[in-house]
Structure formats: structure tokens, C-alpha cells
Image (cartoon, rainbow, N blue to C red; front, side, top):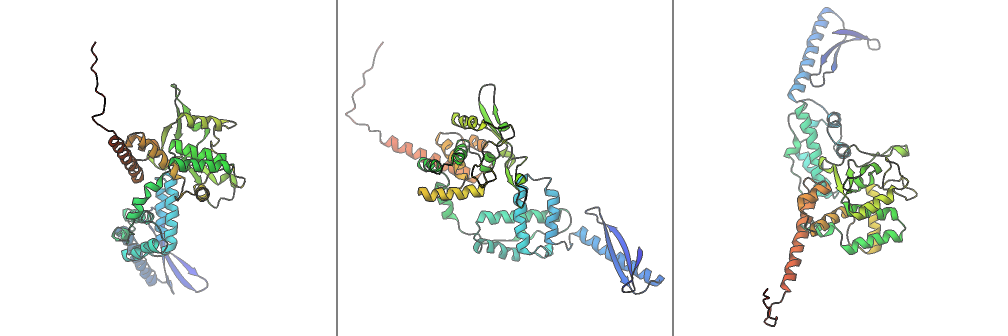
Length: 399
């Protein structure tokens, strides 16, 4: 313990330190008295000891007064070394919204399931977020609370006991399969619109995603060095990252970069290229160095990159011009690729590996929908086979 005098008030501050068992860092505690006598120093030490004991008990029992904002910050100190860049960015974005909505200065242990029920319901019915989006919000917040329990800041996770009133999306789910991929006519309309708007850069990007099933972030971050050819002459595109946009970055040349990994572990893969895809590759090789991106946004006001949100806006404009009654996004080309492979009878596990999906509901449902449709078409064609007595008799040929 040491004593300092407050010159303004004439009072004495008695100070001590203790080591936080969770962080290993030293923390300061203090008490103030009007005198500095032997008796006062003894009382001050007793009071300081009680303060230290209380704080240690709080830390070790998980009954700390850590705020939501502080808890999230500590969570990311650990998560930044564990999560893929894209996952980390998504969680940072989601939790930043939740910290603002729930007030980051709120004591984390005081957030109860009833409060979260009201909050999640407001996201569903006031902000009109989809069930899947709110489920993602819950998952992110739950991970933060689980961290708090694991490291002794908290004893309970209120997210696990929250019960949002999810919307009935059965009709939406039944409708979304047909409306998640393109017909041949719709695909041709999109490519024709690109020609009419003199956007060959977009046409090539859309064609590439249709031919390979890549996500837009994967396609737009492909570099010349990512295209490989085997000794047998087969061509592959190596997917090992995705395009990152660094918001609020003032320097134009630093606003975009390629991540060190694709979206998930399954997303890192080599994609076999068709002859048409190889033609596109060779065309975009011209004049490029190994580290240059293969597909470049040539719109005059762009930074040269294909940003998913902006590409989706372009696709919505194309849909309006071409009379396509679907809410187009860049993912449609990926889903169309999946539907075409399903039509060709490619096994589901092969398709999943090709597009970098470990387990995707949409991929499975598109596959099952298309294969069921192929079976029905076959049945209709079989029913057209007519067997009648008018068929000519068959002669048996003898050697």
C-alpha cells in the first residue's frame, strides 16, 4: 500500500494493486480518508483488502460487472487469431450493430432472455430481417457470452434461453428453389443486356461464375497466378481467398485486398475448367502480371473491383430492363451452375466439393428439385412410348 495526498482537497488516497487472474495484468484500487495516521492506515488497508477480495471473487465466480462492449472487445482479441478473415469481418459487423442497439455500456450479466426476445422480435418484424439473419445475430452474441463464461467473466448465457418469434417462411422456402437459379432464356437475356450496355467486363464475370460456380468474391479476387495447368493439359482455377473491402479506408489503393483464405475451409479448392472457361482465362491473361486480378471492373467511377452489393444492384437493373421476374443476385450464377450439373447427373457430393460447400441447404434443395424434375420429364417421355398391335413383327436373323 502507498499513500498520496490530494493537494486540492487536502485528503489522503490509500492505494494498492492486485493481479487479475484472467488477464495477468495488475489492477489498481484505492480509498480516500481525511487523515494519515497509523489507525487510518490500518483501516485503509482493511478496506483495500476487502475491495481486492470482492473483485477477485467477482472475476473468479463469473459475477463481474463487465459491460457488453468490453466483453465483445475481449472476445475479438481471441477470435482474430481463430477465425477466417471473412468470418471475422462478418461477426465484427454484426456485433457492432448489436452493441449499438443494446447499448454497449450495459452490464453484460444484466441482459436477460426477455430483453433479447424483444430485441430479436424487433429485428424480425420492425426491421424486416429474415429468420436466417436473426439466427446469425443470435449465434454471434451467443459466442461472445460463451467466451465470457469460459474465461470467468460470466456464469450464464442468456442467448440460449431466448426464444425469438420466428416468422412463418414456409411459402418463401417453397418458392425460393425455383427462384434461385436461371433458366437458359434468362441467362441469355442477362448476357444480351451486357452486350447492349457495352459491359463486356460484366458479361465475362457472369459467364465465369456460371461456368465455374464460384462466389463473386472468389471470382473477383482471382489472380493470374491462381490459374494452373497440369501435365495432362487440364486447367484449374485455385480458390484460396476472397475479395475484402476495407470500409472507411481513405487511400484508394488500400480499400480492397484478397483474404488469406476463402469463406470456409471447404471453400479452398481447385476448380476444373471447361473449354469455354479456359478461353476466358486466356483472353484475360493478356497484358497482366502474375499478381494482377483476372477480372477487372471497367466502369469509369469504380475502383476496378467487382463489389457484391454494387453488382447485385446492376443485376436488378438488368432484371427490370429484360423483364426477369426474379430478385437477381450474383449467387444466381452459382446456383445455375449447380442446377446444370444436377441435370447432367453429377453426384451431389461432387457438386458440393466443386463449389466449396461442406453442407448447404440451398445446394441440396436445388439438386433434389432438379433431379426430381429430370425424373418426371423422363417419366413423361416414357409414357409417350406407344405399344400397339400395328408394330411390324420382328424377324429373327440366323447366321
